[in-house]
Length: 478
Ligand code: UGA
Image (cartoon, rainbow, N blue to C red; front, side):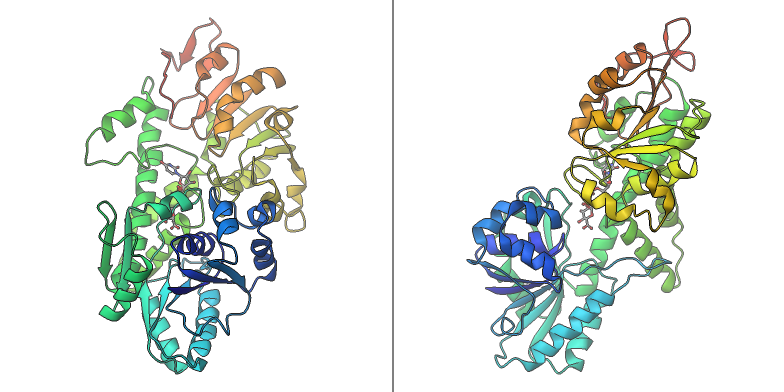
């Protein structure tokens, strides 16, 4: 089949690549010439500067100019197309509403092109980006307004997690397609023939509005899990002695009704989806005259989590940040991506600067280039205090404390670099519970403050103490 993908960001590019891999002819369209040139070059470094997603580059290289074409003009490609996937950026506005500017501009553009086409075969315009409930209906009216004929609309939300987009596309849990007519559902079945009647994949056909709601409800439930563990489970282990976070998790999630996903306590969930989607859902519920107390609490808990370790460092460890050098390990919102949208590190940097640190020595295996866009000294002169480092060792050099912000695997061996590079007294703030041998570090004189656990500090009498309770080794750090 012939498909056009409108928007080649984190949703559109992997989706287009996978559709091409499944044998469809895919025209990936973007107004950003630099992006399109990078993809067209087929060069790993150029593509990854735009979107870094494991497994994506080989597909692009293999399909480029076979089944996958990149363009900034789809005037000719609109002829004979079966499906148009809308994969536009839908950023949040202040107050939680969704900014549909890019989406609406693209919709009008597509509607005009569809109205002008000579081939009048059925075409379905499909929303893949997360858009408020009722947007497919709005799209339908835009298409009609421009006189596009024989067109349908559908909602087919993307459920992929970044860093696992390719893996997830090849083997999704479910595909949800919301459309009004059997003809349109049939066209989508053609595109997704690999998933229809699959023994494991749930292929769900429903109304456009239900499909839109499924996406919001799914993401906010996932964030609710995370906030529950961070704001309740983690807090218990941080407040009462001798609670082992990993055992607590194990004991609770052993109930087959309770998911293990979300139980990895952290410095708050970031990324372009959770924060934006929950705010949007709160807004949508309130606009419809409802209350959204639960969701408001979930959101607040998650936001506070992004900087609360520094408050704990003050009142639990007695650490004064003023004029100190702090190492920031990880800037991306999670491992395996260079994406910093809504990353916990953004709040953390702001909080550290507000506490008067002299220098932040930052390191991330992938997001260094991205970081310079976020921390522009012209926007805030305090960002001049950020030093971009090219390794963990470089970032630790001369620091008084470090903060693990992203769950990069390479930070699991941080203890080695710490011992070789810094002097105690030294405070380790572990926002991801990454250090397996923290007991040994504490033995060596480091102060260890983990999320989901009390401060660990060697007592004067040489016993490893936790507010009086002797801490046993906990082998199961997540
Ligand atoms: C999320 C959802 O997981 C996808 O299903 C959804 O399709 C996507 O949003 C979207 O709407 O496009 P993503 O934002 O890529 O995917 O990332 P996740 O892997 O879900 O992680 C989000 C954040 O939660 C990260 O900062 C991660 O470190 C954190 N997290 C995750 C935790 O703190 N604890 C956990 O147990 C799991």
